[in-house]
Amino acid sequence: MESKVAKDTFNHRVFTVKSFSNDVSIKSQFQRQLWQAIDRINTLPIAAQLTPKTVPLHRVSTYNYVCYRSAIALKLSSAWQQTPLDIAHQLTAALLTLSQESADAIGINFTVEVLPPGWIIFRLSDRALAIYLQWCFKITPFPSVPENYLNEKLQKKGGAGDREKQQQNQLNSDKIFPVQYIHARCCSLLRLADEQGLIQVLITIIFPNPIPWVEVARESDRESVHLRLTHPAEWELIVQLLDLLDVMSASDCQRWVKQGLAVSEAYEQFDKSCRIWGEVKIHDLPLAQARLGLIGVTQVVLRSLLEKLGVSAPRAL
Image (cartoon, rainbow, N blue to C red):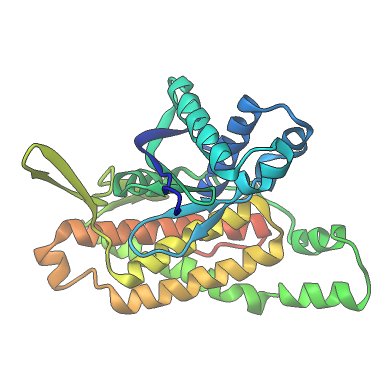
């Protein structure tokens, strides 16, 4: 007899981030929430061996919404002597408790689902993604670092001779230049938009605040919120930016550069496909401002990447 499919959904629960910092990765925040939930419900050795960054969690490729999936319940099943599905239900209940206890914290709404055989699915609403994109403007600059920062970082990874030279060559100026170019391009477009009165820029966009990321409509007795940025090129740039923030929070500089280049390529396609001036500016100013907001987020994130790598973030080329 086929078993009944178990599924729990907690709609619009609050996922909290207690303060703004350089680590604004969505992935790392969900990992931290899961790690706290594990600690809350079980004290077996396997729980003590885990750290937030070792909690398995991956972004799922989707269109028009952000979704992360964790296999942590499957990983814990053997040690806890419980089915993955039971563990997943316990963890989602603990997540709900943690959210309710996080008073005085700024939060974004998300849904949690448990799917067989024990997957835990996190999904951000359009409003939550808009809040998160707005948060990205508050990523603080990294302090100045020596020009040889990259070489020092690579040396600490071990190895010498040809291997070290090969790693250094992978991170030379030619490799980084596309990221620097896109950063400068973003700065140039933001200055132009400021001059034309579409936005106001002071280091980053300060008006409109917040950016009109979403459209809000009334559908009978309920409010409907939809992200304005629905073009495939817009969405690809958003998810590549999220992935860059994720890898910058947890991996080495080799992956930072690779993902930075992926953002640069996504931006090039966005720039070709999504107009801001002309008809869009005249007939749909909020969309033009939302696209400028995405350019602003790209500039801030790439600036952070370049500063973290210890190379210049030019505002013009």
